[in-house]
Image (spheres, helix red, strand yellow):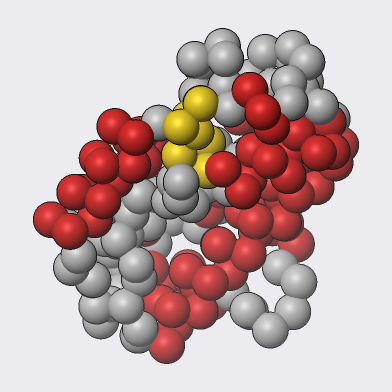
Length: 167
């Protein structure tokens, strides 16, 4: 019960950081929080984390990322409280930097700096018309399929399909 949150299988570094910012360090802390109402400490910690990880980006982006990270934290707390499995952690290399979820139909921008899920980067481009990494003008037609990454994600997921059960 007093196991550190960092040792929970399936909880990634970003979620661990948000819980740490919120002052939650153990599984016991997760059992104490209310998941039925807006948890102020998680809301503030998620915003702090998003601003720390993505400095200088516009408010629309912050709001979307904040919502996603806050929701993930609450979902982890609910699963811990209910003793349900937590899905396996997504290695950073297989994680879309816009959704923090698995890369799906991975594509790169012409800058070759990052790989994104096609649907996430398409939505970004439709709103901002720029490369999120560089700020350079970008259109959907410029996206480059990353077939090697798609194969790597598929292979990794096939090899690592176990799910952790919380006590």
